[in-house]
Image 1: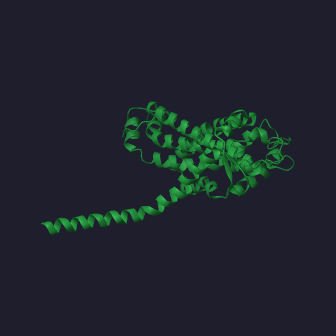
Image 2: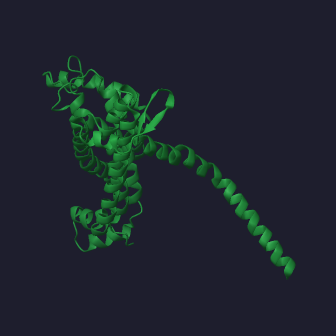
Image 3: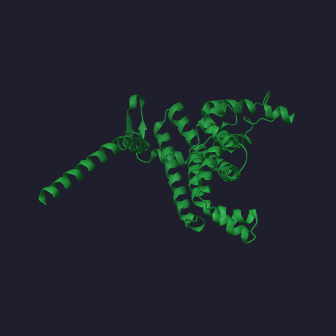
Length: 298
């Protein structure tokens, strides 16, 4: 009996050791690529950076300077405006596409691949194509409109232009996620509703929408976080000398300018910490509000 217990104990320890070995790459990657940079960014946000990686602790000086900056608050408003433009409309269109792809139509697999294609295309290539489409002089859109619209250089519409590209780029990925949620809904619900005389629209609002709400909630969190962190799209669409840059500059773009153009990495780190806190606050509010509309019942 004692030998059996000792053998079982050695076996359990061996399994534990292999479990730690298997998860070690992920844990090491998390520490090196996420945790350490976050701690270092927090430290830099309270410091005055100098050349050659040197820094000097200055307390909350960077945060005071950040909150007193009109450019910082403008970047906050731009980021909020971008979220309002992209998240509601993007999720709505993704849900429409997902519902259409969930029906029995010819070439359904082909259309799924087409809608997902923007996610596998390099962002730089996407931005280059869309800059050509929105070009004032020879762009396709202005050619069709027979009217010159400054899509990228007009401060009043530049954010709308960026939002169009962002929605187009993400709609396929979100639709695929929502499609997976739709396919988990039992057909028996729709059959029972049809027998009771429910129309397709009534079935959508009383069956499809409540049942797909958990997936919709995940998509909403991902899309909001992505919109708050938007940088690459604006960087590639809007040039530094563009007069509309002030109207399109997001928080992450402001971080880039302060850290790598102005060379003030302390202030740039403060912008990053503010953005992380903002994402955390938005996520907490979303989790609090999900109780009112997300249905986890099967």
